[in-house]
Structures are given as structure tokens and as C-alpha cells.
Length: 217
Image: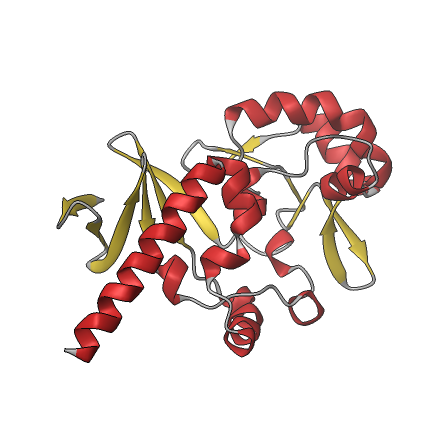
């Protein structure tokens, strides 16, 4: 992926001939999709498909592997039998086709930590967290979805990952007029801190004000 600096605050990233404006926020480059895309999860419509569909588990940071291993005993009571069998035989992580750490899958389908309430998939890790059993909410990649993080020249690229299973979230987000960066406020703060999020929102407001002034000229 090539990154071209256009101004002090705007970048263009070329990925498969697709160009998207980027905001430079501290040591990250943030796609303007986070301001453009309206998104609010609609669990009643999607039934937690992101925990079930796909060809690999949820991406894991290396330090999350140890965290998961440490809290596994508290998470196991919430897991399915198939999920328990998988992590007991394979461990709490696997590798995707690029060799990156991911959560293991059950029958090459749902995440080993997925649990089901009726026909809706939820997360055993998050359930244990909500019940006060552990302090780890869930992998940051799950918390941030539909944003995905990649590294370029040592900086994090914060990009929107469009996936058809989230089509109802796009409809719901447009109906409520909630931009993606606001929907993901808590996980973005968890990942980068409150100062980073404040810098992001200030840049977005400045850009919106500049665009408004241009329209009025």
C-alpha cells in the first residue's frame, strides 16, 4: 500500500487503485470513511453474523494472547462445548493465511468464543466481562469492528472494512445519522486514548467548517 502526503493533515492511500482521504492524527492515519460512513449495529437484523461468517477468526494483538490465557478459566463457563474443545486442543489463538494471530474457529465457521442466544451470536469473553468475572472486555479488533488496523511505515492505518453482513448497520446508521467515528468512540478511546479521540474530532470539525466555508464562497 502506498501513502502519499497531500497536506499536513490529509493523505491519500492507494489500495487496489482505490484512493481515500486520510486524516493524520498523532501516529495514525485515519480514513475519512470514519466521518463519511453512517453505521450503528443492528443485532436484531444481523444476528451477530460477524462472529460466525468469514474465513478466519478475529485478529489478536500478541499481548492479548496472554490476557486470554490468563482469563480463560473464567470465560470457559460461558462457552459452548465445541468452543471449549477447540481452545483446549488448539489454544486461544490460531493463524490466518498470512500468519497473523487470530481466534480459533469451530468447524471453520464461528469463533470459538461465540455463544448463541436463540439465533443470535454473542461473545463469551464479553459476557464474562459484563458479569464482572474478568477485566478484559474482548479483543480490540472485535470492539473496533468494522474498523480494521494495519501498519504502514510504522504508523497505524485506521480503515473501514466494508462487509455485506453489516448492511443492516449501514441502514440503521443512516436512519440515526451516526457517523462511524462516533459509533466507535469507546473502542477508539480504549485503543488510542481520550487525547487522540479529541484530536480526531477537532480535525473533523475543522475540516467540516472549512468545507462549509468553501460552499458559501
